[in-house]
Amino acid sequence: MDKEQIQDIIAFIRGLYPGRDFIALHEPHFSGNERRYTQDCIDSTFVSSVGKYVDRFEEMIREYTGAKYAIATVNGTAALHIALKLAGVERGDLVLTQAFTFVATCNAISYCGAEPVFVDIGRDTLGMSPDSLENWLRVNTVIVEGNCYYQPHQGVAVPDVETANSLGLKRISACVPMHTFGHPCQIDKIVAICARYHIPVVEDSAESIGSCYKDRHTGTFGKLGIFSFNGNKTITTGGGGMIVTDDDELGPLAKHITTTAKKPHPWRFEHDRIGYNYRLPNINAALGCAQMEKLPQILRNKRETARAYRNFFADFDEIEFIDEPIDCISNFWLNAILLKDAQAREAFLKETNENKVMTRPAWILMNELQMFKDCIAADLSVSQEISDRLVNIPSSVR
Image (cartoon, rainbow, N blue to C red):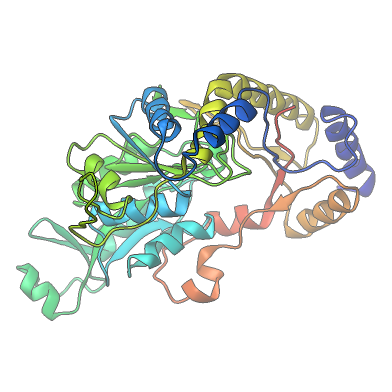
């Protein structure tokens, strides 16, 4: 692709976002009751972790996603940290995930004292590949008393957990697939595979509010799911997250430990376990309530933008637009294209950003980062190819 073609793309994007000197990748959209609700919150003086808006925001997420419980947190990373702990992840464990993800996924695993194990992604979803997951589990694990252990050398008999521990085998205590850029992965297949290996699934749905797989909202397939409402997400609370689950034990427990594990009492400060000060402030939730009211409109707008990109890039031989996968309704949080190779990607990034049209490459693969370079990994050839070729393009509400 030559410079003239890149300039044609820049002109098209500027046509989508007219009158802007600088076109951001994804900026928040405020067109509803955001100012009114936040002012009401200020006037009430309930701006911290108690108030009507945080309760209402949780209720809105429950109703929208169909989850039985929704627990608001200060950010998506905190939500994932707690979800992993509730799923049973302990120090020294292994957690299956994808190398093609944002670093927060692996950070949350590390907060639990566990280590990530990286499997490949699917070319069709950019999320965890069920085939890569199942192939790795079949070759590298053993089931002992209802627990899955990493055992790369299959010759040694492991009759019980005591033997597994004496051999130093590490337990695989969770699987964290991500719905990348808002495109649902094949989550039903992943959950079914993990069930056969006794591994709970925690869905990293940080990017996928408004996305559905087979008419069911992302985040509701696994034992727990999480969302992020960071400033650059489809809807925002400035900073915020949410845990969702249908589990009658874990739902209330999530609320309890994210509010410092304080036992209910009018004045006494009694705490019954190690807790976390992770509760979303009421003033942030006020913003979230206003954003949720506009979510259907926001999603329609973003789908129109995706359709415009799809039609435009259909005429380019060396560019592939990332569309929603089969059986999916994607929120198109961040639109993405695949270029011919890493060299073409770098040329595109340089030209667009120099012309004040913000584009960005995919994340550096987690197994290439210093803190995760020694972690166990399956063959990651698809992850590597996509990482080399992918570019995110402006996706704000127009």
